[in-house]
Image (cartoon, rainbow, N blue to C red):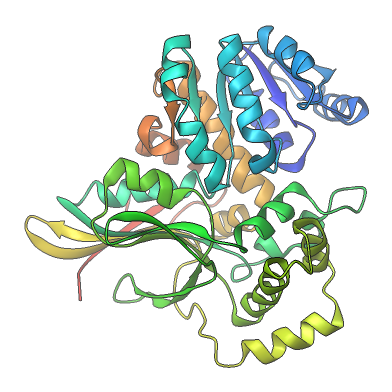
Length: 408
C-alpha cells in the first residue's frame, strides 16, 4: 500500500510517518508538504532506519489540482495538516473524489460534523475515512469505548486530557510555536476551541455552550476533582455512537493558573481584541498585562485534585445497577512520557489506526469516528508495544486500567 503523508514534516506527522514506515503492508510513503525542503528533511532523517521507502513531494493543500494529483497516485492518506477547521474538509473531499482512503487527527468539532455528513459519498466511492485518530480525539474515544462496553445503558460520558498537570502537555512553548517562530496549527486550533461556543451534550441532546465551564467529577473512590470544557469532537461523535441520555463533554485537566490565562484569552478573542493567531502567540509568550488579569481570575478556581491526567468516565447501569466506569491510562513512567509529548501521543495512534485499516481489522467504506471502526483492545495492545516500562494495568498488559464503582 502506498501512503501519502500530508503535513508529514510537522511534529505529529513525522511521528506517524516513522511508525507507519514499519508496518508490513506499507510499500511506500510519500512525505508531502507545501515546503519541499521540509519534506526532504524528514525523508533524509528517516533514511536508513529500515521499513518502507520514502520520497518527498511538494503539495499545497489549497491547490486543488496538485492535491488531487498527489492523492490519485496513492492508496491512503494520513492528513496532519491543520488547523482542521480550515483544511480538513478540503482534503477529505479530494480523497473521496480520488478514491483514496483517509485518516486524520482532526480535533475541531465543527469540521468533524461536516466530514461525517460525507458518509454517503464516501461509501459510494468505496473510501474508508477515519476522522480524529489522534490522542484527543482518538485515544480518548477508544477509552470511552472500553468504558461503555461494561454498561447496559449510558447516562453521562466524559473524556479528558491533560494540559499542564502531568508534565509539559499542551503548555510546552516549543510545541506552541513552529520552527519559524509562528504559532503552530495546534495552538491556533486551541484558541478556536476555547472561544465562542462549543458542542456538548445536555439532556441527551447536542447543544452549544461557552467553553471553559467547570465540571465536578467523582470518577472512582480515589479520583475526583474539577475539569473544564473545551471544543474537541468527542461529544459530537460519542453522542452518535452511544447516545448518552444525560451529559457528555470533552474536558481539559488543567491547573487553575493556566485555566485563568486561557479564560483571559477567550474573553479577548470573543471581544475581537485578539484573533486565534495573535491569541496563540500570547499563549506561547504570555504578556504581563494578561498574566496579571489571569492571576486575579485564578483565585477561587477549582483544580483537578486527584483526577487522572487522561481518561474516559461513563455513568449508567450495569446489570440494572447504577455504576461509574473509569477507563484510564496507567500512570507509569512510559505512559506519562507518552502523554506529555503531544507529537508522540498524537502521531503514534494515527499510525496504529492506519495499521488496522491496512490489515483489515478496522475499516469499511464511509466516514467514521475512531470508536466506530477501530478495535479498542487491539489498539491498546499495539500502543503498549510503543510504550516502555508498561505496568500497573488490570493485568491485560495494554496499559488501560478499568475501575467500576457504584454511582453516587
